[in-house]
Length: 367
Image (cartoon, rainbow, N blue to C red; front, side):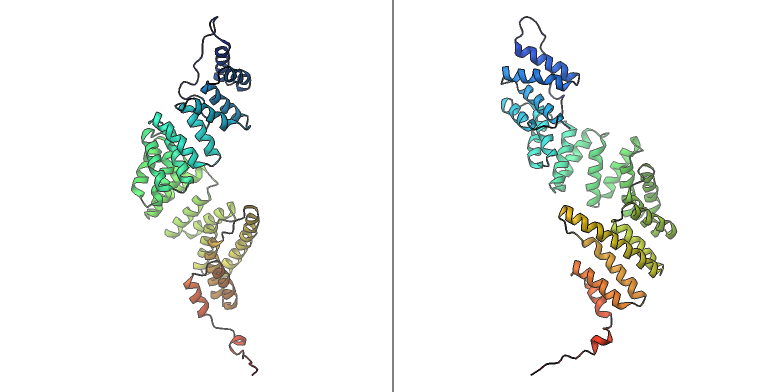
């Protein structure tokens, strides 16, 4: 993402008898950089800034070189360039890009803003500013940046995709659909465009159209687990249970921790009254999930398990339908341990008769 060619980076100086050593080094460095021979440009760049400490573009190019070599010093060189010439747009862009790579999004935004002030039609910078806001959890603020980027460059796909995701989140399906169809007209082979259209048509209960686009997404990207799952949900709505079963199974096979697909397949078996099949499948999936989650928790120090509670709830209902209330109670209590605020599960446990040995238990009190 580091940019080499903004704002006349290469102002070469013809080498003649009137050139000083600094000009010669600048010209040689720029010639080599234009050819992509950065390593050979380094000694000339270093000599140029040593001879001329006010050579801002030299520090900017040194910063790029350090980033290419993945060595420390890039950020300091970009800062030095801006200390000399704060209007050097390329250095602002490169410093912002570096901050973005380091996940210092507020710092990145401050320098991207300087780029926009100098180049108000820079569609790429608007897009990156939108991404920074997304990473900062400011989705509402990100939307106008993606919209501006898309407006300036309608054939630039990334801002269109991100803008539509935000529009879908706030249920503005019509606007998102219009953008996606416009993109699709010139770019028919982008899987994410088909995928998002599939989501929109599904939410609008236009299931055949949703299936058409979800299938297109899978033809291009066969590992899209969400597309398999959503396609399965569309099949359920159209009473195509057999197809739904294979689609949910494929999604869960591709991602053994994909709870939505596991739940959907278990629910399909439950609705078909195949309770033992549901129990066998869900318990196996829970074991796999819990094993993988335990490992991930140790590695990432996360403890988010709320998503599995509905799976426990469904498993409990399966046990209840197989007349195994004791097992149902145990499973539902596991769910309540994850999320105690589930009144329907509390009521379900209350409806299960107490075992006889507990009902007849007498408390002895010694006076």
